[in-house]
Figure (cartoon, helix red, strand yellow):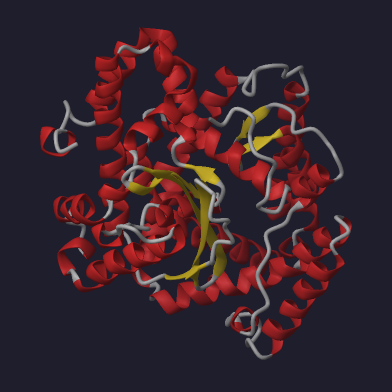
Length: 206
Length: 234
């Protein structure tokens, strides 16, 4: 069950708004270091202040995530049957869920050190995986891989795999389960309930 | 008592696995009903006993003690990991694992310090389930075992061998053996405590969240972190 722990560390890696125009590996590194630097100094976040962690994520990390792409991957085949309004609602709710989870993980960060592996990429590549390794004493290091693709707004993260568990596609069967029970609106409603009735402060910032 | 638990556990595993050998075509979780009740049982046991004890342990044992405990059991496990790497034909890794055991048992003071990692000898994660996977055995259905948690049939069969080969099982003094086994369980659980809140935050349905994470993880491990890309992806 050690992979459970990995879920935690995976959520820790972060991407700062500083990284525009950087290559994917440099981007991952600069943002991660930025955010962890802040968390190391912030006693409130360490003490479990999720609100503050959410604010940090909103400013530093989320600009580098492509939530529409993530949601499309998590929803899978049913995505094409969803109306644009449903797609928007799904993306907003999934974004909120991921942000809350991520922020919770930030509050649990305890000085683990991170190795960044350089990416061997060709100039023409538009889809790359950046590999990192979280070192922790007493157990095997946990690998965290970021999938990024090149968009008009620069490189964006569309998947994070922690110990080979994709945090995005891991939702596929529970999403499919919800859709077969209550349709796409059923899934939206479930996500909304899970997010506490749609935490407007987070969801509407898209 | 350890032996008794062990044989009970093995009998249970065997019984469940035989049920799990039924066809799995197109459905990764054909025994979902059974699995969900086992999952609920394990969750109940965790909430009532294992988790509170792990929290108490985390509270009284300082972090360097817990790291030492993790290192100690990790060192014992390296012997077992070396054997599995050897069975998978990965001689270089097996030699490195044996080297880790040697270094950590001596310089690392009976395994309390993980010196080998600092010296650049990477820790591996291997078990019999992965070995069988390497040999081409199919995963079979997903099963949730009482106490042991998520497995697939292949890893469940592997578990029978894992338990039989567990170095702790060969400690002759029963009270020492039981205390060590309990310490290992509690320490392992304490390591996972921070993950609890995050999973509760993340999962719509904890059962399927953990199931899918387990299946993804095991698939990757068999390929040593480089599985062929999932055709479902994209």
